Amino acid sequence: MKDRSAVDAVLREAVDAGAVAGVVAMASDASGNIYEGAFGRRGTADDQPMTADTVFWIASMTKAITGAACMQLVEQGRIGLDDDCGRIVPALAHPKVLDGFDAESKPRLRPARGEITLRRLLTHTAGFVYDMWNENMRKWTEHTGLSRIRTFQHPADCAPLGFDPGTRWEYGLNIDWAGKVLEALAGTSIDAYTHEHVCAPLGMNSTGYMLRPEVEARLAGMHRRRPDGTLEPMQFRPPQIAGEFLGGGGLYGTAGDYMRFARMILRKGELDGVRVLPPETVELMSRNHIGDLDVRPLPTAIPETSNPVDFLPGIRKKWGLTFLINMEDVPGRRKAGSLSWAGLRNTYYWIDPQSGIAGTIMTQVTPFADPKVLDLYEAFEQSIYSSL
Image (cartoon, rainbow, N blue to C red):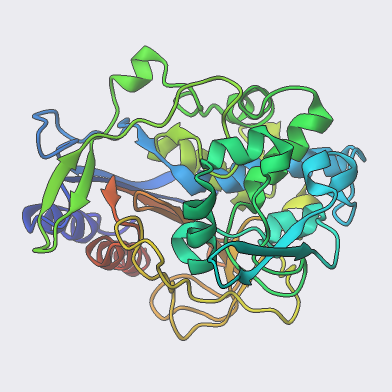
């Protein structure tokens, strides 16, 4: 990198302006990290400085790791991308679609038309949706009183679909269910499988579902954005109960660990002499798998959890096997064919195979798609590319 001072300035100014309490950002090429920066504090009520080894709840950045684990089973011939997952997980065998509500506000359910396949789960076309971005599902959750964990533990309580499988794209619970398919096939928990077959081989030593004491000691604090734009600390701790972890969002980890995963993708499935995926599988994961369907903006149904979401507006976007794919160059930033996504507490990453660059920026702020953090993410990415 020619000049890291410009990148430092972007991050430091965001902290000084109060956009974030603290931030860790990294960028990498196929050989290793080309930039590392940590600025601010781990929390507004914390005197500890933000450091490169600070641990974050990476939420839906878990999905790409689960996808890699599922693709290992595809490689082994244990499941095909277009196999009916209902034959493996009974809760997926006879899905119902939420078709609105009757005059008494009771949910109307009908049998789904189409099968729930692994490809559809990994591409968010199986029909499962999140209540925070789907008003009908928010109403269903409110009406039934079912927690998200319970809908996975009890097949009879499986959440209904928002649409028939394969008919549209909408971000949702799909990769949580892919994780349940993985558990059924592998005969072990998602946390055990992910650790043994993805995280440990890649040297992602601070990444996992369980907060070990030495990892918890480095945990960043959570913050809520007030209406006036300032931040306030908030308490947050997902359940630490073995067997209740989900493939769509349960991991904790560091920016450095995630860059090791991203670098493995840049290197077509290998890192430091360890092969996690064959090159052809990484290439398969990086292609458009939703055909003529498009990635749609997500209007918020629960504003305290998420703002409206529309990443890279004006750019055509498709979905691969767990990745968002921009189909056009983003001026001054990533090239067409780049892979990206994010985590609910405003952690973000991109992987640009054409340029050979990947990056991540990690904060802990709610609601999701926070405009100040998105501005910082864009400025960080632009500063990386302009400094090369």
